[in-house]
Image 1 (cartoon, rainbow, N blue to C red):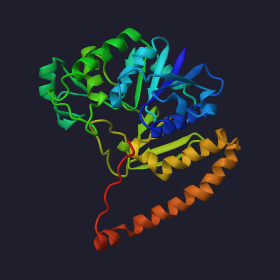
Image 2 (image 1 turned 120 degrees about the vertical axis):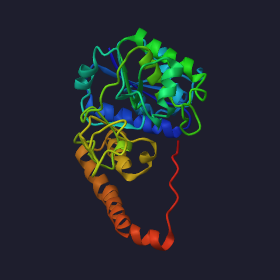
Image 3 (image 1 turned 60 degrees about the vertical axis):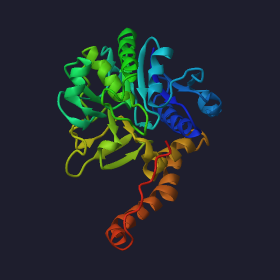
Length: 319
């Protein structure tokens, strides 16, 4: 059995973006031998129409929260092929080929292995970490996608991660939004089990935080991410262009029109029952196009605005 699973804990915002991911899965993976699962501490908030097409598992009795809630995967999905995606992802096609690509890996995450570096990968000093933990390399991974089909291996990796969470600060790991981040912990667990991260390719998954631009249409299965000059985070990926099957919009980008226009198309199609072509045209005409015009004007006038009024505050993530 194959599973695509995401986690939505905390406020209703997480449920909504998990629902959006679920709808994109339903749109592209009809009648496939793949199940979609949401792990949540608020199962009552999941839309009933969406819930009728997926599986919802209540994890409210468990103590994990924040990024470490991903450790709950091995408590609830103990067999089959498990593909975890962050809730702020959207799927742009049939996942069958991705499952075929990952099958037999045991445990997989995308990233790079490092033996040097300061202040990267949520680690203050990689050489010091290697010495303190007793590993020969440190996988810097992006936790928007994990895969496992070897439950025993996945359990060992997660248990290593849990163990080192108890000394997170002492190891020189850097917190994310004032809390522990699972990525360096799972990276340590992977190194303890001699698992090398998969190199980021241009076709499986693209993280918007590593690219300057995105153009996408979920209803036609097209997504393109690109950098104009050079990769902004070369210690994670060297890609200049990506046409991925899965786009990770990465938190704050879910508040902007490039994500929301995709979501509106999906919800009009699934929740309201409007034909996909019509819903796409409606959103493009009445929502996306006006925002594109505003964006163009902002970009054109930004130098003048900054000169006269200064720089605006960065918008905070709802997370």
